[in-house]
Amino acid sequence: MENAIAIQNLGAYNRGELRFKWVELPTTTERIKEAIKEVLNTPYNDEEYHIADYNDCCGLLYEYFGEWASPYEVNEFMELVEESGLDKEVISLLADCVSTKEEFKEVILEDEDYFILYEVSNERELGLELVYEFNWLGLSKEELDKVENYLDYEYIGREAGHDGWVIDRVNRVAVKVNR
Image (cartoon, rainbow, N blue to C red; front, side, top):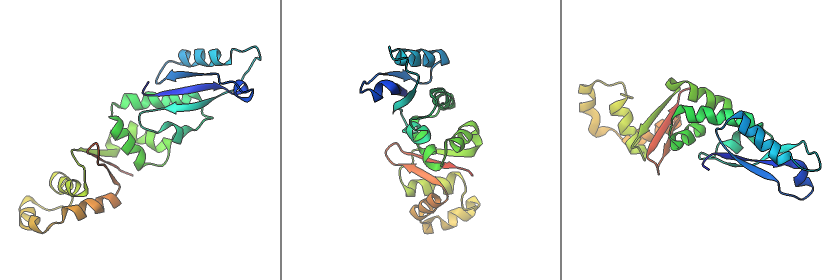
């Protein structure tokens, strides 16, 4: 159960009962309807439910939706995340680069809006990648050969952090969102 929500009967909760159902995401609309119906099926004719808990691989859902969100909207969001085909580490880093779920959706839908560098775990490695792979300094190969001994790649990587690059040191991935 990597990505799931717990749909809880709010009336039962207020009576001191815990009545909820975990639903894995993404799923079908019918499956969500069934879970809501099952949770609300009490002798009290309860009608209110909410999302009591999230279990998601990237830690995005509660931050973006909270407990009063529509389970259908959360499911739609998780469908988008799954369709992106990105690793959970990259998704988590992309979320760190933006403020809202709307911005996150924009970034996921537009592949050109972000860069991903693998095998980068610190500022020095990021600086090296940017200088040699992206020509971040705008120098020709000959010019770069002349000055490479004088370059502080760690400083360049730190400056890139101010420009929006985020590094996941554990998973060795760096991400930048263009805005």
